[in-house]
Length: 453
Image 1: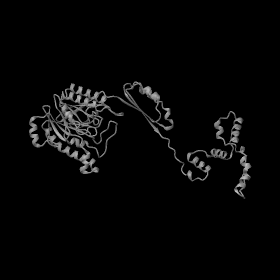
Image 2: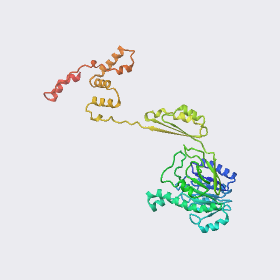
Image 3: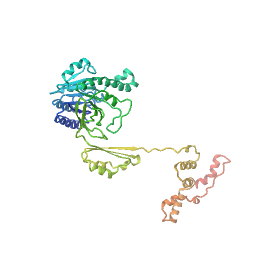
Image 4: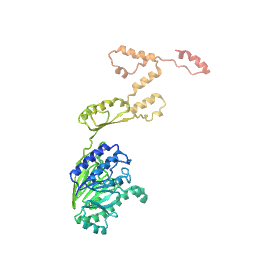
């Protein structure tokens, strides 16, 4: 059986151009390759869509075109992307062939290019007796996204994440017994699901490792499916064991900056005991991200802009708050005028000040200054001298002292002047009044001449 595996179409108003261009190409190619069946393994839409939304209409047209050439199986994806019931209307899009909506855990046989579902999660022995003489072309084991909220109500929130993996593993073992009989009879077995495999790599290069992921590779291989078609992770990757192959199709297009790898759909060649897949790239948009740990380098951006025509470009940098005005955004926008899109992201680092430890415990200003110099590794003597001059000197006298130094050494740099101690000898010794012996008014009278001077 030749199967065309599409996944993570993410039709929405924002993604409409990218989704429809890439999925339209994939539908054309799958028809040209004469695929026997089309499989969409979840997340056909990006979120809830209104009935009149252009994105929903565009997706319906593509499904209708696909169903005109082959039977189509659509799997329920993530509930936040495909609210329950979203896919029901697509069952009406069939033309020459049916569109089957797999919204529950079940097995589905394909006989004469028509779908024959099981009554329960797997085919019973009685159903197999009826099914096997009809020589199915393939049997699909469908495992749509399960509702963790409903499981949490039954087993508790803390156990829901770990119990989900155990429940799915038990189902894989149960389905594996049925699939083993089908493989022994020479019937191709195909698994279809939507979720995270422990240890897989995301489209941003992050390894998904933890105890709350739906699948392990061991459990998926236990299902005894010749081919296991997965959705949810947007990066194509595959694992092979014997004649079994497990593969993520990846998203049909590039929807976010920083995604690595090619985008496309998988063309499968599946028979009992052997399965192989090939990624057929779609014309997804090219997204370029340029990061700077500081202000953007215009020379580097010029080199990027020379090859970024018709690409989507993101430029990111980070600068201190006092230097934020040094970045010329208009110049950056002008460089990428020929790009399909430009997104600039500036991270402004706030200026953070902290008090010198222990400075508040010092009782005098000169001790506070000395403490700050000690913590800041600054020579304290010149600063203390200037502090004394400011405290005791007169503004005119300080000015005359500076001018006198300039007259004495006109060629000396100003920095040299500042590094030297100020001429304290130019500050006159002011008489200090004695302690008052009479009233405060008498004492003020005795010092009046001093303050007037």
